[in-house]
Image 1 (tube, rainbow, N blue to C red):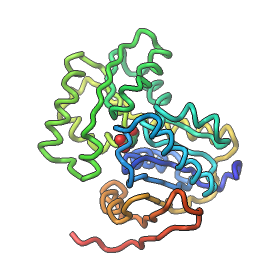
Image 2: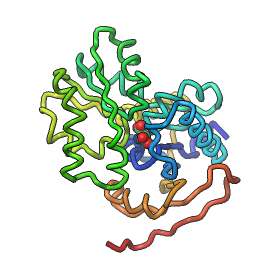
Image 3: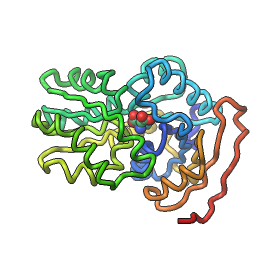
Image 4: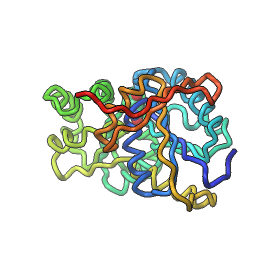
Length: 281
Ligand code: DGL
């Protein structure tokens, strides 16, 4: 059912990266209810082939369509880079991706633009193409960062090793004297403190999560689909371990969320709910 302002916005990622987009949705559109899906059983996405990513995305979109959402936000750059154009033709729900909002914001901020992203997003050239379509004079360097997602998903955010890895991914961009840096993967904002300790203050950081939230708000407004009532609590669903997701995400959500384990291919009413439990240390 499309076209009902009371429906939720569907938002998905492979894991906790999408929480950086969720935060922006809460900030800009506090009245909107959200269905958050994390495909944690199958992460990382960024080292998979484009055919695999398209297949995973179609399964998620089919499941979300069955849940009844009014819009779907791909809170995953890898899916946005490799699957958005194809699936937009296949579903009659508005589907938003991160690349265009991110590229538009980046050209406002600089001319020498670095992109850190998953290997799949970096090699797709999606950001370079989108940026140079808007500003052909902009220079773009993209670095694939295969280790970041698993370091974040295993909560190794503040370790010396993570800082060392970040330094090695950023150095080639620093050597190019970038003036702005795009977080080309939604997970990376969780490493903000690490990046700030490495980057000179002259480098503008562009987080596409902020701009996709603006784009989503504009689109809902245009379609007359903004919710004017109160938001329902976010429904969190995962394909992997609900407990692991709840435990990891509490540092960004400020509470331990109730998380459901769902089976994308099962009928939509089949799920196991994990009630919020006090966490042992
Ligand atoms: N957070 C996602 C992205 O923005 C996916 C990361 C992954 O699973 O590799 O690309």
